[in-house]
Amino acid sequence: MHRVAIPRIGALAVWRAAARGFLRDGIRPEEVDWSGADTLFDRLPEASDQGRAGSSYTLSKAALGTIETALSHSDPDRYARAYQVVWRMAHGDLRFGDRSDPQMHKLLDHAKAVRRDIHKMHAFVRFREGPPHGERRAFAAWFEPEHPIVEAGTPFFAKRFGDMDWVIATPTLTATFKNGTLTYAETSDAKPPPDDAAEELWCTYYASIFNPARLMTRAMQSEMPKKYWKNLPEARLIPDLVQTAQSRSRAMQEAAPTQAPAFFEAIARAQDRAEEASPDAMEALRRRAAACERCDLACHATQTVWGQGPVDAPLMIVGEQPGDQEDLAGLPFVGPAGQLLRALAQDVGLSIDDAYVTNAVKHFKFTPRGKRRIHQRPNVGEVEACKWWLDLEMRLIKPRLVLAMGATAARALTGRNGAMAARRGRVEPGRHGGDVLVTLHPSYLLRLDGAAKVQATQAFCADLARARDFQRDSAQAVGDVAVGGGGTPGNGDLSGLHRG
Image 1 (tube, helix red, strand yellow):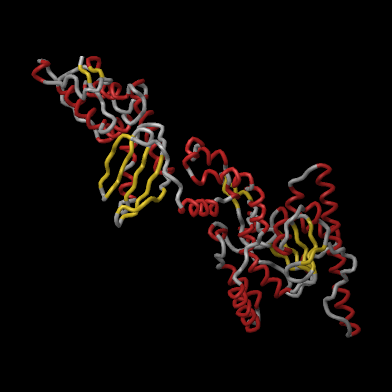
Image 2: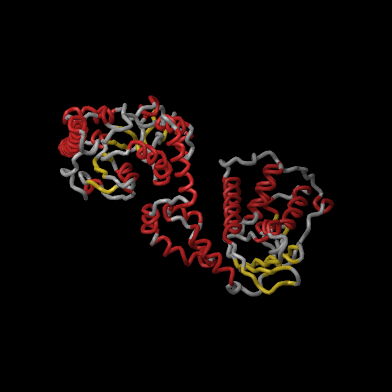
């Protein structure tokens, strides 16, 4: 029996040299004991001593890399198993990568586990600064790997942090990088290094980049298992960050993005001049919006869907965004929701053709599903980006009343969120200084059935009827001016509308 003692440091080189010699001399795996005592080699293989034919075998680079990676696993049988695999491959009994073989299967699994452990080491080592070594800054870190990976995992740090001295200590081995030389020794002091001032700075940075709106606890714990938390300074922040994520995410949604005041005002002044100089300002805006790239929606939609209707309309109707058919036609409210709106408006006597009809967002947002394009609600950033065009439309139309259909339109026009059940039928002050009548979106009615659909349709028609009354009063006011020559053209009677 040949006995081999594998040292803690330099184990790979010892195993490789011994395995090469045993294979060359034809020594079978069952004749080798890889759990030798303290003596480095109890009996080295010697060709003359064996007196039998050996074999010469060359491993592929991928096979050698995988086997050596698996040797960094904590399984005590890893050295014997690796030599058995090499022996069988050399004698044609096993193909590398054949997972149907139990030995190969376990070796590949061990290599995968070691690579994962090395990845965690690269991700979760946290250096703390200590007294400098001459002109070089010095750092120390404590890490507790699952497998003996110090020699396999630390060359990464030597390449990345070659301009400083550092020490990475683990419960078994310690890697020391000093003046460009990486050495290993058995760990003498199993204590983590003390905190340093940079740790608070790192925690502040970590808290600032923790996005509560994208919190996925399971995915986070899968990538950052709790067993590593005790050596991560930022881990003590995680429970509070997770607990307050929902409230902070809600606050982020409610806080509307702001334009830089100077920039916004300069653009507004330039726009005023452009409008004054243009005899057909609305058509000019339509052409400019056709090339809009203010958000990513422009990359996917077929075209910009601009508003439609008389530019002196006292009533403006604002929906959410174009749908599939609107995106293809380039016109607002030509799809199923638009057809329902026109049908119900006709039932109550509201003239859609006398109103200016548009959407809060000018591009179709969707997700492809097979050959279908499924509508997606625009987010706050997309609504705010498109509000630029909605504001310009409103400045030209100067509506006396705006009918906001749906939550997205209501938010774009009033700057406020809230449940539609409570807001529907209320007149709210708009960002433009005028009145906004909040109602449901006709696409919502299409998704209902039964008594709920009947009730929602009645409520929607009631709001359309109020817009109809305003439209008639506005037309009457214009007629009075034409006949009597007094009053203010376009002044509809808003007395019947309750302001919320």
